[in-house]
Image (cartoon, rainbow, N blue to C red; front, top):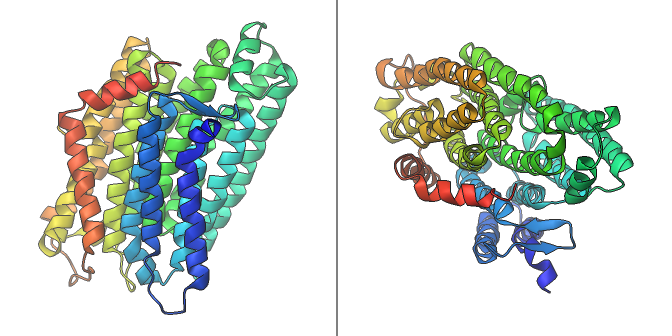
Length: 474
């Protein structure tokens, strides 16, 4: 039975997803059933299993490795799952969505993300990618009567299918050259051979697949439409969970299997990181819709994460995990505020809709300010520490030019974050407030997110040490 230990966290989440499906099937129409509680049980069980597996480096079937790196990302995904469950209730009630279907899809997606973060085989990474992708496609278009949601889901699915094809072709070429899809075997065989054009083609195709999932330029086209069309709670889940899982696999593949070819792919990744930061920031400035603005913000933050991955020194490796954690907590908090301000007659998702929010919902305005300032990198928020370590890693690794681009784009991004803050505090509302009441569970989740942001900003040392130790094997 010890060979199954590594898959226990994702097994807990999968069991909760199946239980949610069964509960929905047996629920009478109109009956209220605490299906979200099943997800809570599954995620708490996964958290307990993650803590117990820490420092044991167990593996299952030779394909899933519960090392500290994978467990750290699993912990991030558990936090994302818990916060997503907490902020989803108002959306489900308001939109009259099928709760069992919604929670089951979210939990299946989380299980796929966990598998992607811990897989040590390219084919298993691909299968995990498809599990999480299919669930997120459906969640994006779960408001079936909404043309915008249907369009967003279709665009996401169509472009996702293309990226999956590229990724699978890369796996096929890699297998043809090395005779294996295991990451450790690929690294050993690649290191013993001189770089060949077919190897570079394999790396390039796999890079395209990952770049799509992390919303890197020029594979970012789906992001603003998908985030705008999806329910805000789903958009928050997508922007954090999918990115965390994709970056975990990105790091595992490129800093392990393809590390011997680093001299060939590093220049390409430099250009992608620079373009991602610039496009995400510049286009984000022009947005008047908060969800689209957060989408371009997510693109820019993907560029900062690519800097940490490219640096790959002691500071950069730890910065990847720390940045993923702080970004996940911050961004899901921002989307949580958007979700709570939404109501049946008015989405309240434009920048102008936040005018006078301080007078109508002082607590939500304060929380949104914390999240936006953290995204902008203001001290003493966690976002400042995360960016500091990313840029420090870039300078230490000799990528000073990339660090300068990162600092400049971060400064420019402050404009669209502060624009919302100015709207909330300094601009009177043009129409009477139409904001719904804040549910206690969702409000508590946002407060916890804000507390974690301050904790990670003021006392980051312990978490940074865990992150650095977790990824030291690469």
